[in-house]
Length: 204
Image (cartoon, rainbow, N blue to C red):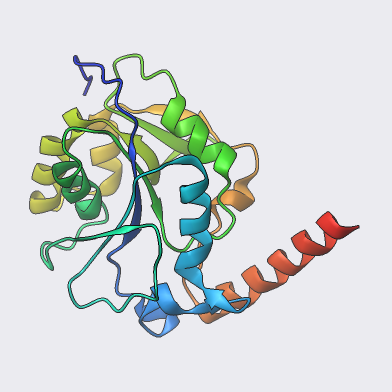
C-alpha cells in the first residue's frame, strides 16, 4: 500500500509493551537488565531522538516508574503483533509513529533516527530489515497505514502477509545485534553479558 499524502510532522516514538512476557516469567517491562528495568533501556534511546514518546500497553500490565513518556492503552483483544501499532496511529493525532518493542536493549539512536527520517517515496511504512527480511516491529508507520493495520489485526492476518500488503520501504540494519530481543531468562543473561562487554570496550 502506498501513501498519497506526505506528512511533515515528526513521528511520535512508541514503545510496544503489550505482550504478556510469559516466556520470561511475566511483567516483562520491569524485568531487570543490569540493574534497571528492561523497558528503560529502550525508552532512553527513544527519548534521545524524539520529544514525544509513548508506551502502548495493556490495561493490566504493570510498568516500572517512567519519566518523559505518555502511557497509551490498547485493547486486550484481538491478539495480534501489530495491534499496538494500529492503536498508536489512532492515538497519534495524524502523526507518524516510530515503533520499537520494549525488549530490544541494543537498539541504537542512529537506527531509529534513520527510520524516522528516511525518504518514504510514497510508502506507508519504513521498516528495519535484516538480510532482506522485514522487521515490522522496528519501523516508522505513516497515518495511511492505520486502517489496514486495524483490519489486519481483527482478521488475524499473518504477519508476513500484512507486511507484503503494506509494501514497506526497507532499511537494512548493519549490525543485527541491534535487533536482539530478550524473550527468555537465557536471553536476559546473554544480554547482560553483551552489555558488559560493550561497556568494557567503551572504557578501553
